[in-house]
Image 1: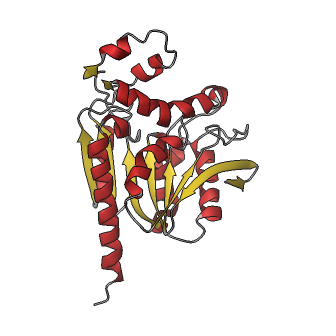
Image 2 (image 1 turned 30 degrees about the horizontal axis):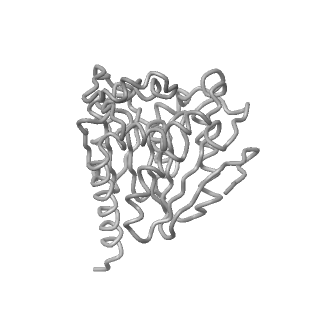
Image 3 (image 1 turned 45 degrees about the horizontal axis):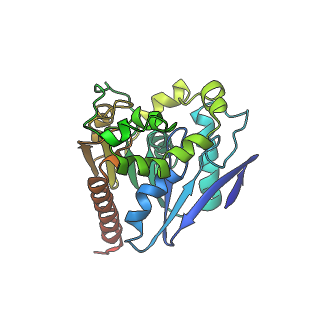
Length: 276
């Protein structure tokens, strides 16, 4: 589906019905990163309308020259929410750069957000762990003629054929579809300094799940720990055997923690409907 926001035809896909869940992927990938890890969980749960969009310059959504930083991206996201979700309250799942945008949405419309899932968020920034590969398959080492293998190995923690196949279905297509010239030469991923300062004052008192990879040498795990005091209903977990693609590295634990988040969201909704 297409939703026109200003002069941008934003591509998105929807699954299910009920409570809207806005799923925001990371930088230089697309919606398939989120459908790949979240649909297996949500297909087991009724009552949720999952909305997966491609951010401008990524996937099937084109870039525009007027977009310069994350403030512009947040403006597009806000327009998309108004058009597709309208006045309903909703949930957000944001991965990596999508987590940065999620914090911006909490600041601008937090009263409408009933739950937040942050996956390998890169805000706030913290120290990075040393790169570590826990499993290195000999099968992959012998695949010297595979042009996509290096891209996988640059981020892999568990370098196995099974995880490589998942990477090729969920992550790699978005990387290949992205407008790399726009993302690396024209667009600045940061917010402007004034807005960045405002984000330090945000608070979120509804069910949250903040997940980080213990071996994530791209964005680390220490920085997001700083969010806990301002997220009093958050589960915080640092997953071993997980890098920046935590959702495919440690899929079993990731899925269980997402299910727990959904359970807490439903519990919160039920408690708010009880009249004393």
